[in-house]
Image 1: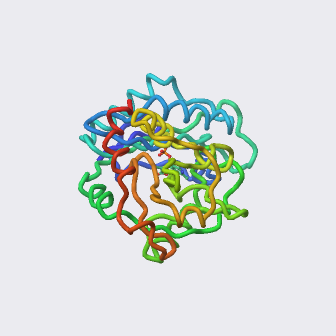
Image 2 (image 1 turned 60 degrees about the vertical axis):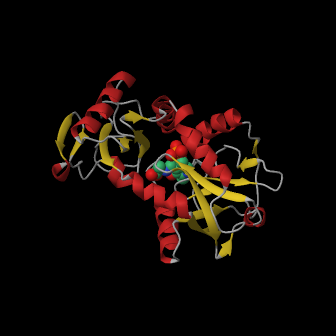
Image 3 (image 1 turned 90 degrees about the vertical axis):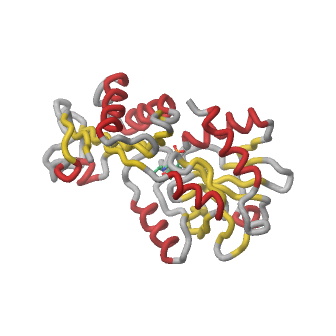
Length: 281
Ligand code: PDD
C-alpha cells in the first residue's frame, strides 16, 4: 500500500508526519472521506467544496489548487489499485514548535492522502440485516459542522456503542433531540411517510451523502423535511437509517434495545440505496 505525504508517494508502512505537526498535537486539521465506486470518486466536487469551507472556517489556506489535489487523489487510488473503497485526505496547519496561536505564514499546511479497498460484501451484509444503535449525550463542541479531525467524542461514543453490541452511536442534544450518528447523519421515515433529518446548522456535519440523498429522494418523489425530532419519535418511526460516504444508506433496526418497526430493514432505505449511484456524480 502507498500513501501521499507532503509531496511524496511513500510506502504506507513508512508514511509519517512530524511529531510537531499541528494535526498530531492539537487536532488542528480537517479531513474528507470519499467513497470510490467502480473506480470513480463519488460526489468529489461536493467533498472538495466542503473541504474548502472547513479550511476557510479554521483559516488554513488550501494546500494546492483543486486540480492538483484531484490528481493526487486519483494517483493514490491508482497506486493502491482501489476500484471499490475509499480515499481519505487530511490537511493540517503544518509543523511548528508547539504554540497554540497560528504559526508564521511561511509554515505550509500538511497534506496526507490514503486509500483502501472495501469489500462490497461487508456492506451488503449490513444492508440485509440492518445495524443496532445506542443513544449517547452529544457532548461535542459547538462547531461540528467543520469536519475537523478532533473526533474524540465520536471515538468514545462509537467505542461505547461497540461495547454495548451496537454499530453506531446516536448523539442526542440537551433537549432530547437527535443530532446525528457518530460518523453518519441520521434519518427517520415518520408516521406520515416523510423522510426527516435534522436541519444543517453548527450542531451537525452537513453530510455529502445527506445532500445527495435529498436529490435522490426528489427523483423518487419522496417527501423530505428538515426538522428536529426527539428520541421518542425516532423509536416510533417507520424506518430509521444513517447515511455516510462509506456506507451510503444503512438501516438501523434496533436502538437502545428497542426494536424499530418490525425489526427488519425498510423499503425506503433500500430504494434510496438502489437509486443512489445513478444520481451521485
Ligand atoms: N464521517 N456526521 C459525522 C459526524 C461524520 O463523521 C460523517 C462522515 C457524516 C456523514 O458525512 P458524509 O455523508 O459526507 O460522509 C456525518 C466519515 C465518513 C468518517 O469520519 O469516516
